[in-house]
Image (cartoon, rainbow, N blue to C red; front, side):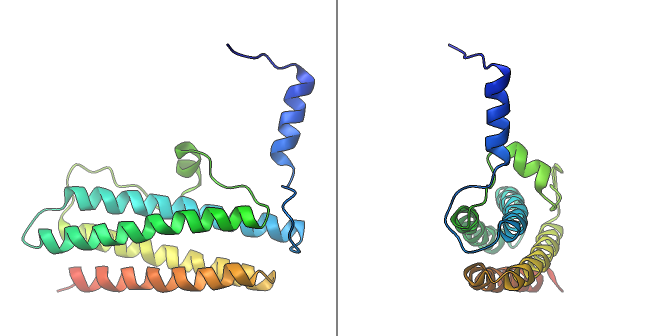
Amino acid sequence: MSTILNESQIEDAKQHLTRPLATPTDLSVDATKEISGALTAILADVYAIYMKTKNFHWHMSGAHFRDYHLMLDEQSVQLFAMTDDIAERVRKIGGKTLRSIGEISRMQRILDNDADYVEPADMLAELCSDNKQLAAELRAAHTLCDDCGDYSSVSMIDEWIDQTERRVWFLYESYRH
């Protein structure tokens, strides 16, 4: 059974979607909006890298199959673990975060790779580049959070930068000759 909303109910629903949450925080409304926006964009990128990492994990081939397959699986687990922490941080400060795959695809800055075949070295190089891009986005969010006095986010981002740099290092060392 569907419910038909009148114009007043539709307007109320729209207002609800644009109002900040009433989550108690000492961060300003503007800081909450800026930090939530930055972290939600990062969350979309992390999901995009996670999916690409799984894609390459599933489609890996060649002489180093086992090593690359296991490394990409380990990295995808780490990426997926980041998603809940990022989304919960946004909610803790009163922000709103991702709700759907469609929203991820609209917000992600990491390009998808839908190619039928990608050489193993090219897979690793592409993931290395994507993770470097993520590290840069994390650094920008770090600066924003620090400027807004959101030290909990700064602390979490420190850890995510370190994890991302480790992924970059492992990927780079795996594909270079």
